[in-house]
Amino acid sequence: MLDYLLNALITLFVTIDPIGLAPIFVGLTRGMSRGQRRQTAIRATVTATIILYAFALIGEGLLTFLGISLAAFRISGGLLLFWIAFEMVFERRDQRKLANAQKAIEEERVHELADIHHLAVFPLAIPLIAGPGAISATILIAASAPSTLGLIGLLVIIGALVGACLAVFLLAGPLDRMLGTTGRIVLTRLLGVLLSALAVQFVADGVTEIARAAMRAG
Image (cartoon, rainbow, N blue to C red; front, side):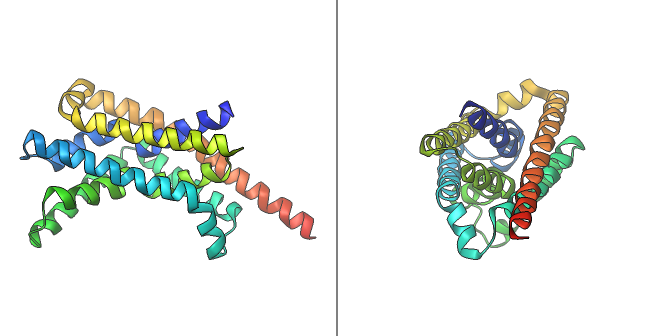
């Protein structure tokens, strides 16, 4: 149980990346009042929590309904997480996030919808907090929960990490200045290496499960 919860904490911390979201939040909410920033942060984190909880509870059932085996999803999810890790190690992830966020803001300005409600849902909640990597990791970890208690522990971890995002958003300016460019680069690369190892483990588990199924069928 302890290994399961530790694996869940590390994987989701790296994929959600609360600290890495600080400079993006600062850029997206530039020009807002303090109250508007707080409202945006709360709405974004509540929305992301609901999304991740939903996938943790019904994600495996959804895969079954769609006819997708858990082993296949482990492999595809592991590959996706490995790509995220690759971007982190080679400093491409932040650039992509910033580009996506800027694109979203520009599109909202064109349609005159750039208010705090839209911004909180997209792009902050989706895909910056509850992105494809975090959703995939949530489904994979929930599917491998050793018991109901383990699943409850996963939900607590998700809530804590999204709560960390809220704290980072509220302290985004000072935190970004404290870490500095060098601090962000070092932290991102270290977490990227760790995530790549976890991603390879997901792929290996999926391949092993498919091989065992093929041997039993044969």
